[in-house]
Image (cartoon, rainbow, N blue to C red; front, side):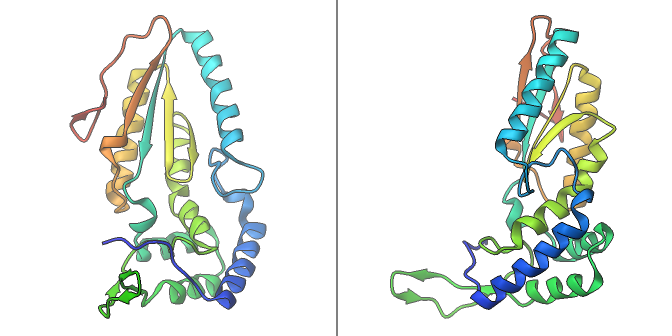
Length: 219
């Protein structure tokens, strides 16, 4: 089961803003440069500008380009708390803040409300960053940051939160990147939405190579 938007206490939201602002100030240089989601001075527009300009350069040089678009299934809901806390430490988040996030994420539950009726059953939430909170987006981009760092020396790519696209004129490099992302998703318990993984062929000399992910052809 997955929960909807979280409603948090106003005082907790103030505390989240203080903690998140401090983390962004201390560690802004550690976010991958290709991540355009939830980062100051980066946006959908900056992602599109950098990506399209790179597309044009590659097509002009090689006359072919393949782009693969990835999306993670229920990404914000499936972030493993144990893995997340380990990544916060590795990212350089101070131990005091890491412990605060541990307490913040622990013992969360949800129940269902329809009109004026609320079910008394409370279901525990063992994973996920709380959507609707101040810290949720920041926690997610820290969680996925090591994936982007791993792609740095492998292929051209851009990311906007959980939406990642890789592109190259070399089919071998593209398939290597696909395998890398699939392995990372498996190891980090953040499954890909295979139905949303798609392929775009560009360029007049494109060989229209067939790529696969986990043994399944990408459409």
